[in-house]
Length: 277
Ligand SMILES: NC(=O)c1ccc[n+]([C@@H]2O[C@H](COP(=O)([O-])OP(=O)(O)OC[C@H]3O[C@@H](n4cnc5c(N)ncnc54)[C@H](OP(=O)(O)O)[C@@H]3O)[C@@H](O)[C@H]2O)c1
Image (cartoon, rainbow, N blue to C red):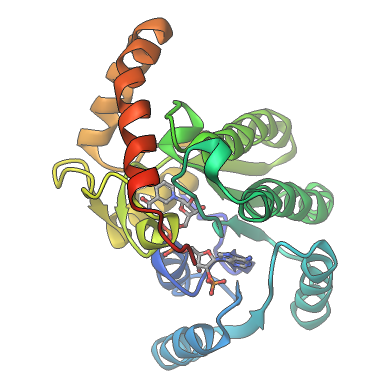
């Protein structure tokens, strides 16, 4: 089965860390050109040097960009196209969460999350899809979350942004398929990256080891599903079981079970307010 990224110009957002960095590493052997996008230029340069050494034929562009700025998103796409030609694969991976009772969260942080997880992701899809349709092939891999399919107190805005990603991606999957464009979403459970540190974990406890996976495995399973043209990939067997059980449970029961947790998390947050990145 041919990968959508084989000999393609690939843009990876959030390539400076975690899942995005691994996706870039694993696509590098087959891609023609990779554009690495995130804010931390030093991290991107480090990855670019590693990839150039391992894959001398690969062209790599380091493109530091704050994706919460739509003009910057547009300029990034223009630059990639001017340098390499049409974009064959877009990986929308950059994103962050914020664990906080909704009324206690700073609006600026929630707004910036919506701009990155929702607006930038939709805008980038909208910018690249016409070329893919014109070429009759191409692919978009959107990194959503298990929270794109579920809900959780103290993560309301993050959950809402990922519901957007899930709804958009599954609908685009149907639009893209007859036109030769593969649109896949990956909905991971907990992955060991910098995500939790950025989000702030008011529970004070990491997710159980049984459900956590590494970024390498997450990226590998995401790309295997993308290669097969799947609409939805949930990496990790245990989290797939958990999500299956969640989907089979009545929503009213889940809301009821979350009530004490919501109160407890709010109290913990009030007792120990945390400065967030
Ligand atoms: N780890 C998990 O448990 C988990 C679970 C489900 C879903 N996810 C999703 O997986 C995706 C990747 O997260 P991760 O786990 O790999 O976390 P991570 O290690 O924190 O990586 C997040 C990436 O997003 C980039 N980013 C953040 N703000 C940005 C901005 N304004 N402009 C451009 N890039 C920005 C970061 O780069 P800079 O800081 O250099 O800009 C970084 O490369 C996210 O969409 C997240 O929601 C993660």
